[in-house]
Image (cartoon, rainbow over all chains, first blue to last red; front, side):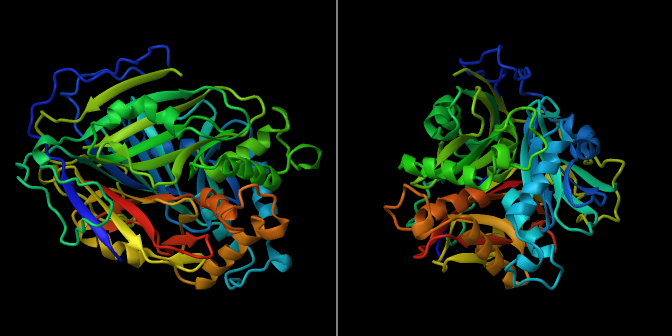
Length: 185
Length: 185
Length: 185
């Protein structure tokens, strides 16, 4: 194995510019919150916490408010940044999808169960943890266990119809831990 | 719900080292651009903008140049960092795939349509927004709505054959908004 | 195409607080490493390197130790942050899944081969690079080519059963490059 590495240390010495750079193509018509504060009062910040979601039945669940309730005070400190959500499990997943009609959540669960065989017809070798375990692992890799969402003016900058889903792929669910990392200015 | 939180504030006081650390396993043979500038002139920067992609027909589309054209001036300011692309929609997706043969894009669309049933044979409850809407939501979670790509020496550090795809899953497409967040030094 | 842009520069001027903020809901019972150092000694850091994984046979492979071995010295410098892993290829993928029973890796490969047709029965137009190439591209978008994992107290903060998988989707594998970017304090 070959590897190349360089480590940067971002310790600024130079005085900051008095006015932040604003690109010429800035168009106020676009619905981006105004983020034109001067840079002097801003410093890079990191916040990290673990949010625990109580056990959910098998299926897809909208958990946006459950999560944001736990981080909104920290979030409000960030003018611009990124929020990272990391589910510490391999039989559930995090995804972003529709936040309005719960039928979308049900239909997505229907899809996952159709595409990943379970029970007698399934070809899995890994069966020791129950018939729903190997399908759960596959679904977890299909949807993924992590999300990164932009922060703008103290809020998660998702689209109007977007929400955070926790998809529980096991029949007998347990509480699920999400490591939330916030980074920005 | 239980939660544990710690907030870090990255406001440096200590003087920066005169020379950035370079790991001993650094091997110039690896095609990583030389990133050996001293750290004094570098400070953590954030840039955020919304890029709007005009309506695309249903299918997978290579949009690397459409996006980089909008951010290349900002990108050029970053020696090392991460670029995050967040599609604010639940019926389209962003993915990284082959940038050369458009047949790959067509075949991927063929795959998605084969794997996600649509129309009379589909089992969906959510049909009020048209027969292509529920399949679009599922495809969006399969491929995801966000990408993070490393920045090295002012450019997106993708592989030779990699490009950014916007996959439009609706029949009647609309313009799609992507929140781009750049962070680095 | 319309676009709106604002560039922030995170060059701090204000003196840092003597004590980092700790949220009131902090619960030491949660297994989050204690991260209560004062902020004065911390500064935002970036590290970026390319790790090369030697050729692996087609299938899913646990590569956590292969990767962490290459970055652990850099990782140990970060109290809190994010590690980003970017595979520079379109016919392999990176995913997080079970780190214990290798049957899970085999079953996942079985699933991928069942769901993406290959050979005579496959509908692909893109066949010039071999019958396994177009399926490889599709699998790469299904699982994705990038991961972001939280860093806590100098280590990747994954769950007990989580590991990093490199999924090789080609029959004749080659070495695979992963750009690793570390960012934090």
